[in-house]
Image (tube, rainbow, N blue to C red; front, side, top):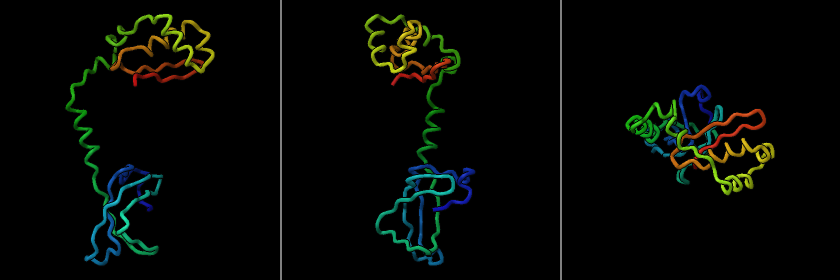
Length: 155
């Protein structure tokens, strides 16, 4: 379905959003069907409806976008959770958790590396290993180098 204004995010439609549709909008006795957005492109959205929804090419439909409350709930939840801003901006506590890796840990990381530059550079290998073995819950680090760009984070 083509949606005017979709590229400008007016309306903002996400995959998984609910859309209500009624065939032949001029007939008020038609019932509303609820569908799900399966994909979103620049100007079009893909919709999935139950088999009871019958649409023939050329039929007119009245469409209503239903607000996805889950997104708003997640935003409110994020605002209510305790958030330590200095920990994110200046992660000194997380940096203190980084320790010098053992030879075994370094060899395990070395065996899994694809990039030969890091594999052969002892200092880079130690840095990558130290970041990889950080405890769970540590902040993700972005490493930017002349040869390789990495984003390492705890899973």
